[in-house]
Amino acid sequence: MARGDPLLHVRVSEELKERLEKAAKDAGRSMNAEIIQRLESAAQNEIPLVDFLRDEAEELEWALAGARREQEALGKQLRELRERIIDRGATDGQALGELIIEHRWAAERANDYERRLRKIRKIIKD
Image (cartoon, rainbow, N blue to C red; front, side, top):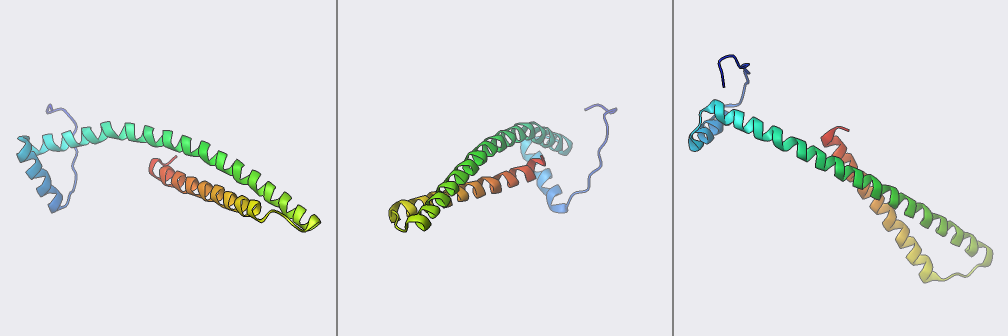
């Protein structure tokens, strides 16, 4: 660092100051060097994490679209089966039960993907 480099004044808690002093002493650096090293390390790690989260959000959006399509298709099958029951009376109870369960699972997957997407978007503020 040169004398002409910009200065940054920061207020920290006494506890944080003590932790920084100890870490600097343990690493054989000045407190300034310790703070600079931590800031640079954090800045380098931030970009890959944001890129990872954006990729994850993209995959979740794709999975969410698929789960919604599946939920809609299963809902359509349920409505058709309901109409057949109304028209003809009897139906295959096991097939109906399986269809209801599949529809619920698709809805739960869609809800899970939406929840995870909200968390990621909150972090990366997209």
